[in-house]
Image (cartoon, rainbow, N blue to C red; front, side, top):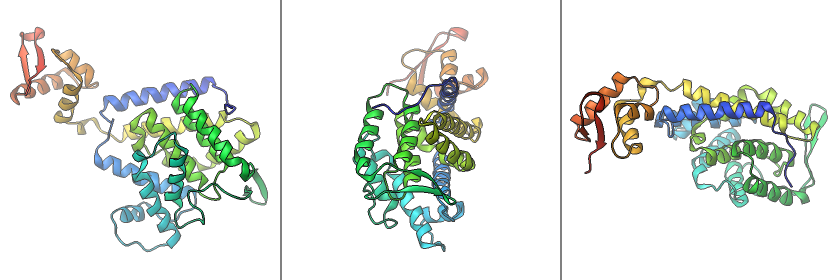
Length: 320
């Protein structure tokens, strides 16, 4: 049974914005960012997702733990970070549509923190805000069936993958399949689902934007519960994804994309004879002067052969 939500004009607009941002990432050759940016964003992701859950360690502590430097702090907080590092390091090895891998990820994230990591809860749970019960989760006996239905939805439904990742995040939080770790698992698995839509999402710190809007995050979860559908939550998460992508783009300076990277990328795309105009089309954002310099250097490096003169000049990758 398909989870209840509507595709609103706002959702379509935000999806268009995200598609545009993904196009900019591609034109900036951010299909796989530089190692330094990947590391920085992974640290932001781990710090933010755990900070939402009350972890007290800061960016410097997490960096030190990644670098295997001794850190002084609450044992539980350090263990949470160590587990998160292991889990995010294994993102690529987890299958997005596998419930067994979903459970395995929970086992990694929550090892040593709960009695039964990687296992669905075996008792009734609820979320208390202040003195009021904010949300009573479905009975524990229903969890395996509800989660199977949710995985069937993301496997088989024809809606856009990015939208389905938001629905999964909300529905998983509603089902609350674990005694603890539901929030970090919702965010973690949405990232894994987004990676199937576009690999760049492995390196986009979406959790940082959620943390910066934490109050609204919980509010839209509550409002969606009250409405009985995830429409508001989808809109919120699409805003988060769009903002996170744009932050990553802004943090990437075009001058850092050097001649070698441009040339390697162009030669992996262009097949047969091509001209300067086609080189510019592949490396969006560069000037004709930069393109001319690149092509001249490629000729000097012996990587291209050429035919014609002036505006009629054509280039082709040299074999061998």
